[in-house]
Image (cartoon, rainbow, N blue to C red; front, side, top):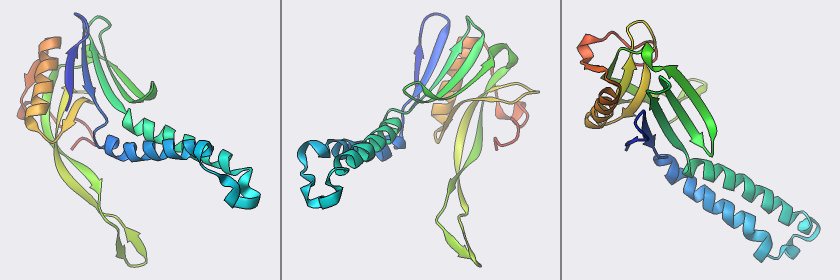
Length: 193
């Protein structure tokens, strides 16, 4: 679920949490805490020759699991529409480390919502001598900042038309852009079916 917040008179922020990454990351984070704390409460005498390297091994393993689990648990997506600077920017990551994308706000004409498909990898199956994983497609709705001659800027991608429409309406009201129906816009570029 995307939270829509006004951060001052010239900034609109769309925030999205980790979603299912939280479910994946929490057990990894807990395993990292247990592995990193093992040198404090575990006797490594049973390891004989490896007893000296045992605590360091568990500390390194725990640190790696802690970092991976924390990155999943604290992952976030933030889109900032800044009318003062005239930009729209995207950040995906955790702890300030991640991917960033930015574009000029005045290069877009309208906001639109469009139905599309997203691919999820399926189960492995044997085809001849190789294993192949056919993609499984599911329907999504994307809210875009759109321009007739350029690539769209995806604001929201979700399974609910109402949620995508809510984000599109909030951004359109904030920026003063119009919301165009799906039929009024061209295809929003390659890779955005």
